[in-house]
Image (cartoon, rainbow, N blue to C red; front, side, top):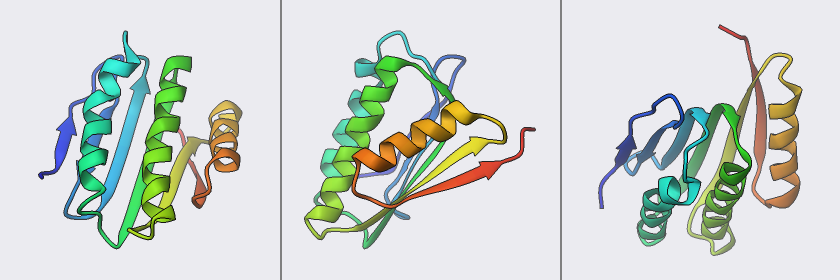
Length: 128
């Protein structure tokens, strides 16, 4: 198993699945034409990671915007990493970044925090 990277585009985020550091990161815009197809290799990597998980796993979410279909796929990502923690394979945390005054993105993170039983850190960042 190796680390995995997807270069971001105008409609898709940059994705870095870092095996060595136990880090899963998504950044940019997430409005792919077919979210299920876009997330499929991410799910597959996470399924493999399950057997070699690091002691600590960190999920870094720095999305500017994501559409409804991506929100369901993102929930599925969180459920897969939540399973790592519930099975005692890895301590998991999520760092959810949102821009100052972006109430929608903050609320989205808070909603996931309610649904998923892993710690979410809400981190405000300045707009560049």
